[in-house]
Every structure is written in C-alpha cells, then in structure tokens.
Image (cartoon, rainbow, N blue to C red):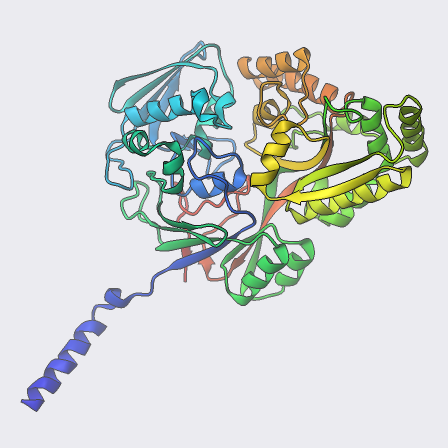
Length: 513
C-alpha cells in the first residue's frame, strides 16, 4: 500500500511538471502614472491621463495608436467619405463583443456619439462633434454620419480615446456617472478596480479582436512626485515610468536593467492670462510680464533638453509651418521695457501698488518651477504673486471660472484644429483665458470646414498671429519630447507622441518577462 501511495505521489508530481501552464506565473505590468485620471468614461474624460488609461479599456471606430497622423481600422473595418465631405459611412467589424459579452452594434456607436453631443452630459469633447447633424444606422454594422458642413478634423475626433464606444444598454441602465467607476468597453483590457490615489487595475481581455494580450494584468499606480516615480522604477516597484525629471532620466539611463525610450512629443506648456480680468486684460500688462521674465534661461534650466522653446501652439510637423514669423513676434527679456509698461499701468491706476494675485498650476514640477520663476521676477517690480499648485479636481473649476494667470499644458493629435479650437474659441470650456474675438472664432470655424492643408493652414496662421503675436493672451513655453523609462523585462513597448500608454494595437502586443 505504501508503495502504491508513493507511486501515485510521484505520478501526480510528474503530471504537474508536464502541465506548466497550470502554475505559470501571472504576467503583471506595473505602470507609474503622473496623475490619477479624473474620469474613465470617455464621454466625461477631461484630460490626457484619463484618455491614456481609457484607450486600453475602450476602442474607437478608427485607430491612431500606431501613427499619430494616419488612421487605421479600429472597430470600423472600413469607411468612405462622400465627395462633398459631408457624409461618412463606417462598416463595423462583426463578432466584436464588450467585456460583459454583449455584441457591439451600430446602436452602440450611435448612442456614444449622441451622448457626446448631449449638452446634459457636459462632455469636454462635445465641440469636436458639433458638426455632426444626424446619425443613421441602416443595419447593425453600418453607421452613417451626416455633417452640417465639411469638417476636416472628424477622423481625428473619432479616433481619440474620448470617443471610445460605450455599451448603450449598460450606460442607459446605470447612468453616466456610475459607469465612469465601472467602465465596460471592447478594448484589450477589462476594468477590475479603482482604489483612489492607490491603483487602477485591469486584466486582459482574452477575446480581444486584435488578439489576446500577452500581459495578464496591468496595475496603474498614481505617483505624482517624479522623484518617487524615479525611485520606484529603479527599485523595481514599477515597470514603466513617465514624466521624470531630466536629472533622474540621465541617472537611470546608466542602469542596465532599464531602458530610456524617447520620441518627439505632441504636447506643450504655456503661461496664460485672463482676457476679462484687470490688469491681466490689458495687453500692456501681458507684454510687461513677457519682457520681465528671462524665459529662455528659465526654460533651459527647468526642462533641460527634454523639449524645445515654443513660439506658437502648433508644433513643428503640424501644418501650418509659421515658426519664423511667430518667433519674430516673441518679446525679448528687457527689464527696462517691463518697468516702463508696469509704471505706465500704475500711473493710470490699472495696476495698483502692492498688487498681488495667484498663479495657478497643476502639481507638475516643471510648471510649478516656472510659476515660481515668474513670481520671483515679478517681485522686482513690486508685484506679489503666490504660486498655487492644485490637484486637477480643484484646479479645473477655478480655470473654467477664469483665473488671472495660470500655467497649463496641452497635448493632442497632429491637426491644428485640436491645438487651437478647444483653447481659443469663445465657446470652448477649455478657453481658460475667456479670450473672445469674432475674427478668431470665424477663422477657427473656417479651419474646420475648409479642405486642404494650405487653405486650412491660412486660418490657423490668423489665429496664432493675432492671439499670440499681437494680443499675447498666452506665452508659449516649450514643446516637450516624451520620455519613458522602462524595465528591460518589458518587450515591444514604444512611447506615444501624445504621451498615451498603448499596450495592444494593430501592430504591437507588449509583453513582460
């Protein structure tokens, strides 16, 4: 009997050894993110952190994950555009299911687009879809968009994560806000949990239509302090780190267990002024601030080679190319000129003695440093500025209401509409300066409706030259490259120019050893 038990034990052990998959180690990717997303429901997402994470849960009709400028099939396997540019017809893939097993149909696409357009949802992305007049669904796999007028940026809008397709029946049942905390998409990863300020956990979608992800679980950890992020990637606490300080990137580049990956970015930082609140509303004040600050030296010292000085909102590589003109309109560092303008404003009573105000900024170290540099220089002219670095949930309402001075950033797709309309159009919720001029609105609207880069580009030149080269409503600071530090165990990962974290796409499937 003992021999028999021993034989069975050995046989059992052998069986286990012959079936290694039964005990295969779970492949977990730990990603450090610089800020926790405010929302995960695509309709409600207000910024890049939510967009980046949601792009792994949801799919869009078309995809820009592998190319920031050329669309690839997503949930739509093909599409056609009418000659007049006013009708777009999309044919959906068959057999795609949401994470709850429900089949994707044209009704889900129609519902998502109508939710984006519904004013009651107050979607931050609504203005990108207002040219859509009507949505038809002639069958379960066909979606037809009818536009009021030709709209060049439509494909970019449809391919952005803020147009991730929602399961209509689920959202109707639970509501937009409840869905935000338990999102369900068709993407490569399924939502598991969200522990505020600690982690967001996703697991692989084995039925993903582009193929089963090679990673079993992804843990996104909000780590707002870049020094902590650097320590975590160095110690192995995370496998991917973003938005690190330049000095930490340089040090970590010497670690053989890490990879430093850099691509040209599509994001900028800028100093903005109120167009409606005195003294910021006086162009002389804005010019005085521009002249008072040694921006070249400050930018070089703060960003240290991780980007280049910007003079416009439109980065190189995105039409129209107008760098030389915009650079010629930048105001050079000139203390005498700054003092002359400040004194003139004081004499007229527009700027009072001992004037004080707040410079608002998110908890981004470079932006905080720049705000501090501006505040330090302004004290030399008898102006007191307090730097208020706030969480996004607190900061966003203040900016929407209208702040006197603030430092923010923006990242988007390589189409000038996405770089300008949302920031400079009078009807946009992201126009924090409350900048409002009929000629600017008209140029932005023309830029959307015209066809061809040359014709559209002329409209964006009007906007940039007026807003930044005459009214100085913003002071552009820097176009930033995107650098991620990644564990050498991670394979197939490439940073995104938009600073997204794409783990599975039509050409990639990130893995970890």
